[in-house]
Image 1 (tube, rainbow, N blue to C red):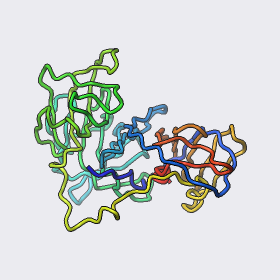
Image 2 (cartoon, rainbow, N blue to C red):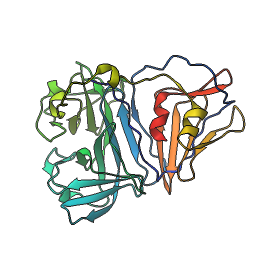
Image 3 (tube, rainbow, N blue to C red):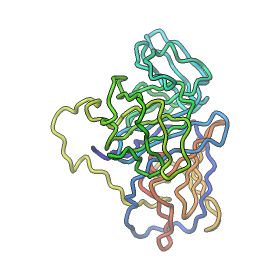
Length: 315
């Protein structure tokens, strides 16, 4: 499975507070990239915030939040606003919507305000620069996602990559692909999946019987690519980048006061805050905030503050 990074997300609506202690930003050397594969589930600290879940082994990203608005268009689409200015997803009237409560298949007309919702997007999905950002490239939609959610790659024992959750299959569980078609438990193995679950044990890993599993790493469910692809052209450079350089090239100003103070990155509409020796990243705009995790820590290399490659995804 290809390792595509999260594409440049045009979340111009967010202004964030980031806590990263920083130091000087000169132009110096490279270091080795952090290649550890992690699934990221962001925390929800503010009302109506939106969560982003991603995994480096998957070609998809999951957005989770609350439906705060629905607009009907004249073109057969409805626009679903997730967590106020977080994201506006345009869904066709016949779009497949999966219900996490019972695994049933619904339509976009069944989406109501106040529902907890997840939308699955391709990692490189383009978004508009509007407020909120909009996209019509929704791969899968899951409603009534009221329980806990995990997005990770599961092994042959149905344990996720972080060894924090194991799926119990002693009773029948509902497994779907991104088109809403039925799959088997075996299809979860060695694939990325969104797992909605309720009660879990306190063991390591915690064990749970999920209410719904949506396999989104299933290559059979992905549209085939056309034409020959040069693997070298597809390769992604995951080397660390110079924080100040990459931010200023994207039109942002970088503000820092000392090595122990937060680094603030802002373009006037969106503010990102990060901290030295941490991978935590906060993006906010309007009244909504996103707390995310980078693939590695911000760190100091000589006189240059370095950042993991995927910081660019949030600029």
